[in-house]
Length: 54
Image (cartoon, rainbow, N blue to C red):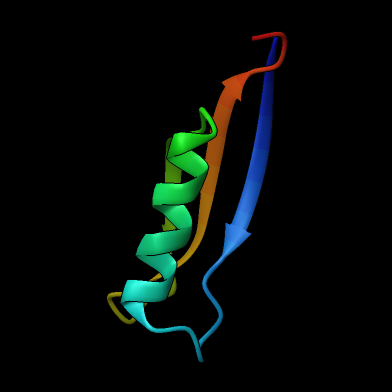
């Protein structure tokens, strides 16, 4: 079974802060499943996935 997490990149977060957050989630076993743009060339949400019973 899989579990999902949605994280948002708020407009005040810098790219490197968002990248650090994604790297931390990756170390916890999360993988990017999908990314949603805001229409201005930036990501606004990222959907993460991992196995629930790992």
